[in-house]
Length: 310
Image 1: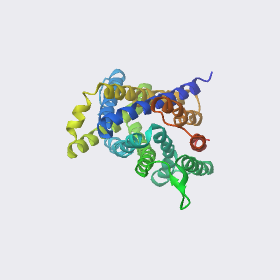
Image 2: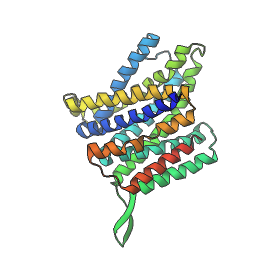
Image 3: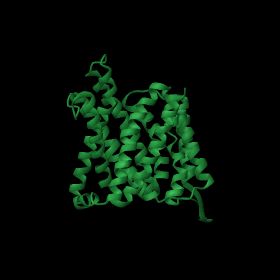
Image 4: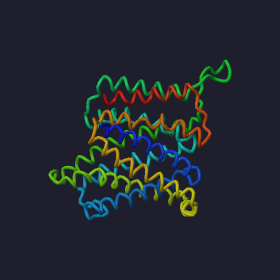
């Protein structure tokens, strides 16, 4: 009983741990090095999974269109979205970074309308405004003087990175859905192993494109020495490995498992609890004070996300 719900809650906890690990690692090695290292680690972990179930380390059997659209998804979701996300961790912390990730569902809904011709329900539109209100409540406060009644409580650059992270994640998800559609057309749907492994193979294709893109950026911006130096930072590497294990590997695996035992809407809502779950550990580990208004705003934004799945 409640197997799917418990697994979904476990996913939210897993992603909370991931965010905390990556905030710590990002502040030590920088967002470019961290993104390349954790994507490379996820490629290896996913490759081992594929090898066990399919005998292949990389899904070369996927068609050209699958690689194209999943590659575009990797570029938008990883190179743009995750670059913004990890920079937001450095500038405003993982707590607020995860708060801005609640922008992913409305971004995906809008992109789905434009790209896939999907319909947006009335509750989804309401959820979009509720989410935006919750985020605004958390990041906007009273100004220091009468001439400035309202102001951002966070650095503008951090806010912009947070927005880019949420939007990149949402839009990347839509292209991922498109790419997975082409992938599924190329496999035998009667083969349960092939169907089970499809999301892992698709995730690896996205990760390969993302890692390649970050490596090119690192080389062209002459930060290769910084990347090499990062491998000698045992604390940063340890948290990078831990974050990759709990996020792209365990988090993705358990999220796929959750929807097999409960409704997708229930699973998605419970998995979206990360911005709330991260409040207490952020305070204990990084001494980030949480005001009542920020906590309420976070809860409202998560409620807004839940409306997308009703």
